[in-house]
Length: 109
Length: 350
Image (cartoon, each protein chain N blue to C red):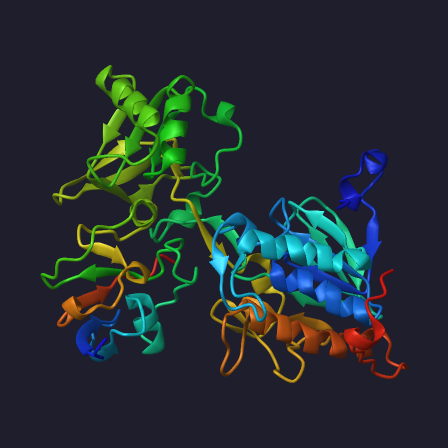
């Protein structure tokens, strides 16, 4: 597959917007991208939708895949959840997410 | 595996003191493999874990998931890896104390450590290996500034004795099965149960959801949806909670008890209070031997932090192999360092 980098914007907890160039051929998810760019996302559970430390709000109009039961269960057990809340670890970086804008949710504790 | 302290023979006695060379906190893959590497150096190990089964996350969270980065195994199920590790360490007869949480650490004048668990089990050892992974899982605390003031004074994160709520006005919040199940159960016990939920629908067993809806329809309980609890108040114990609807309006309701049931989140727990150098939820180590700032205490696997750290099982295996060499020098300061190839010497158990 032809390698295509996409550009996404991640707004950190201080409100600073970071424009990031992200490869789509590495199977990375949003939690890993935030983690690699040291944006204060812990990803404690290693990406298994078990801790919600990578909760973010999707602020652009991108049509993301529907959350799995595991993701919805975790969102039901976390705080600061909004209608546009998603777990970063469940959002795989694909070409159609070019231009995605997300805001990192506040920390639970 | 024998769980020494829980053996019925000892039931009438005070908790005994277990003595060993290396006390391992955490029975995950790295904690288990420590027994093997220590065993090669004739060091005995005792493992404590808060979970009732060995294996840590591998057993508890993803036993059926394949792991692809264990050298020599193109793919191995997490549960199988734990099973194999248990088999690999069997010759070294480790002791296990399972289902108990490590609480206290004390250092004696001879530099040995005594660890005490939540059930009073005590283990004495010259070396402590912290292989606690993400830490222990503790209930999530809602982000309300004065919530701690009412813990055990009306706010309970875990329901231990349902009778405590008899004839009380209670509020339950959360979305999972546990919140639904307790709402149903306490409907018959408490004077009044109000359930608060963030969304307008519930996830959970269909049967439980239907029961809760039926109780609400018959007026036995109150269900407030699309809302969350944002404040708590009371003069000494909890008296009211403030509910904020997603639409913006907020109001107070009477609550002698509030049980926020939002599941568990990994925390370092009591280990954070032991005077170890920490970086957020991780323990800082010297990569020469994965020792902490307290001589005799090592941190291995996901719980440690150093420059270039990768949270991988295979890195934890390496870390503990190096660390037991250093531990040997503490256990036997006068003996020469040992190093054996198992291909030459085989594995000689205890």
